[in-house]
Amino acid sequence: MNKKALSFISLFLFGCTLGPDYKRPDTVSDQEIKDSLSIIENNDTSIDANWYQAFGDQRLNSLIEQSLTDSPNVKIALEKLRQARLNLDIQGVQYYPTLDLSAGYTKVNPSKNTTFAFKESYYQAGLDVSWELDIWGAGRRATENARALAEAAAADLDNVRISLKAEVINNYISLRQAQEQLRLLYKTLNLQKKITLLAKDKADSGLISQSDLSQIQYSEETIKSQIPDLETAVSTYKNNLTLLSGKLPEQLNSLLDDTSNNIIRKAYRYDLKALYEIPAGTIRVRPDVRQAEQNLIAQNALIGKATAALYPNISLNALFGFQADHLPKLPNHKSDTFSLTPGLTLPLFHWGALMNQVKLEKSATQQASYVYQETVLNAATEIKNAMISVSRQAEKNAATRQALSKMEDISALTLAQYESGLISLSQTLSVLQNLTKAQTDLAAGNGAVYQAIVGFYKALGV
Image (cartoon, rainbow, N blue to C red; front, side, top):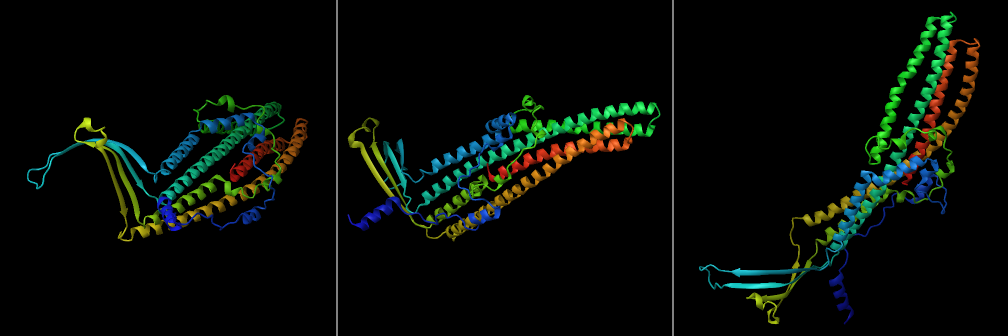
């Protein structure tokens, strides 16, 4: 057999694949991303998906594990991935030959007013074979599209998990922050009550005016008025966390109740150098970027599928079986029957619809390319903003910690001076209010550092 014959047979059986093969857009290069983010090149750098365990909070770790297992959002994304993979399995065999077992009985009783009328009655059983040859690669492009959509569904699942993890941690930090603020508020209230009792004694002795006593009592009631809002916040964050974990309200109270190990009471020391020691290709594997690229690959494949519709379509249909006018004769070897029906479809005139479909797919592919570009740019921006946020929150937190230390010294000295009658009541109240604010600011600052770190790792896509 000569080479031309072999080439023809290969084309007939395996065909070619029309349309452009996918090539990643080069609008934003990895080097540009690296320079923009000031990434320090380190081939050994890897990002631990369990980075949050460095916070040292076992309750948080347990909560995240429960959420990733039981959250309805994760289960929804899992089902979407399962559907996409099943669709890939279905699409992957669309251009294979199909085989069906068929059986039937035919009886024809023609009209008496027809010429050459004849009666017909027979039984038939056999195997029907049909095959639409994928000469131009329409089926292979459809499989390529389905495979990319399955990969996009997998990236979406990763994105759901990462977003869920970040949301759980942020709500947990907010819960612990509200609980710490509530603890500080009760501590301040107890101190304020002692001052009120002291002021009452002094007012009874005529050492301070009734106006001064009213001012102290006003301060105490002001503190009390802040408690309901914080208690509401605590309940809200608890309910948010149970929802994220796929539970009903109050089912996780044993895990979420305040403890002496509240992580908000300590500042998390984060190595700021780690912000820049990340793999240069981090953005490309971020779930939303992966999803955008897979959507682009899927759409690109549709150009080839639309292009293939412009060319002739060849199909083969065959029947292998038995046919007889009486059922007992059907298995007899004389009842063997065979039919072969090749078919050719050549598109001639469709009012430009087929060409416009190709143009439509090309335009949609260009749009998907822009979406991918925008997703990469957005990812780089989020990472850069997260880097800045972690650095600035760490600086601010250090300054807040120093301010609280100074305020605690001032407060101790002020109370001693007030009890000795060396300073006025208004000065004492002012110092105590500043102390409460400094304590609350530190708790908020500690929480802000944790949440900035959460934002950084979420931006990295882990």
